Each structure stands twice: as C-alpha cells, then as structure tokens.
Length: 80
Image 1 (cartoon, helix red, strand yellow):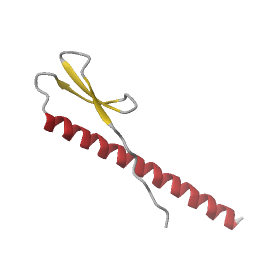
Image 2 (cartoon, rainbow, N blue to C red):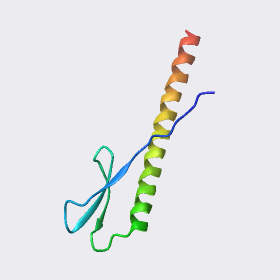
Image 3 (cartoon, rainbow, N blue to C red):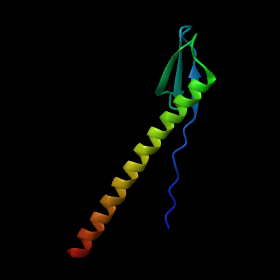
C-alpha cells in the first residue's frame, strides 16, 4: 500500500506593520491578516488551522487527480 504524507507547513507572524499582524506560511505566502490591536492567540491559531485544512484538501484533490491520470494511462496502455 502506498503511503501518502500530508504536506507540512510552518507559520509565522509578520509584525512589520504596527497596525496589522499577518500570518504567513514558511514560503512567505499570505495566510491571514489581523488588526494588531484585536489579534488574539486563539484567533491566529484558528486561522492557521483553517488555512492548513484548505491546503490539505487541495493537496488531496491534486493527488487524486494524479492517481486518476496514472490509472487512465495504465488502462489505455493495456487496451492498446
């Protein structure tokens, strides 16, 4: 059975703007933004969880399409 590993994403806070806190992924891409005065630890953690969930769904969908393409290619090769 083939093992499928989930992608790993690390997050960090960009606090370079005194008014806005930006949650970023390890590749510096944007995940979420918060008012610096209203940002809470719980809100930031929740945003990271939601973002990660969306990334995992996209990854799983892409893996599913790749598997379908592989199976279709094998079926075409066998029928030829």
